[in-house]
Length: 298
Image (tube, helix red, strand yellow):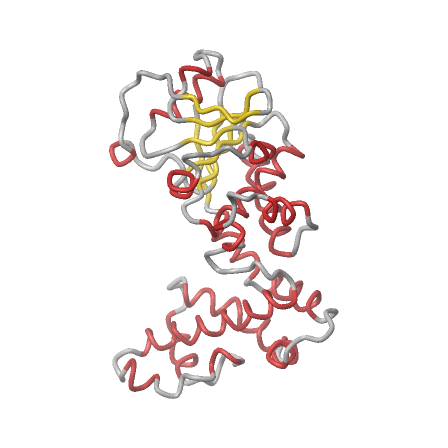
């Protein structure tokens, strides 16, 4: 078995916040009527944003530290509404906090762009919490399913393009999606929907902190239109038993803390007698996107 990991959340943000991504964003946003004055200001400054985005991202990744002086002097970045209350930065950061001040200003700059993206392109957008409201109300599922059935926005298109790249690169037979928070659920289910539509032979597993806390009493069969299994709790034993099941080496009734859909109903399988092995003792196994390549025929 060979496993690969990727953080599609970070890669999606980097795919949006780059020269190519901003060019696409501004092209789409410029066709949206009745934008706020703040968004119109950002559009008027589009050339400045496109020119500064790649160096600023490199600075935030600690790959371009000399840019701190220009950013901190407020002579480099275009500014919109997020900069309205930064007059006291010298008091807050002091003369010794040049890089911290620059990182704060660079963050405000990205949040300005995020405000335009949320208003003009995707109201669910957030840097770390995509469609969090839908995730918090997922027990009802109707709103979440309606959003999943809607046309993909630029954010979703970027995410799924990256997913296709990973699928081509790794060619997995099992994909595990970690959902640590409600704000990660919608993106994970977008991936699950895409995998079901375009890679029907691939098995999709959902796990993580959100599943462990919010889905312990799972009864919604529609969730399994997007994933095949929901795995609960820390440790590699549930995943290991599930992989054995997919190889044909274990009956479904002997899975460990795993939900699946059987004859249209959600069934909790927990008949395994295997000893738990804590995740901290084995290293990371699920990380937002994990592609498992198994020697199975499915």
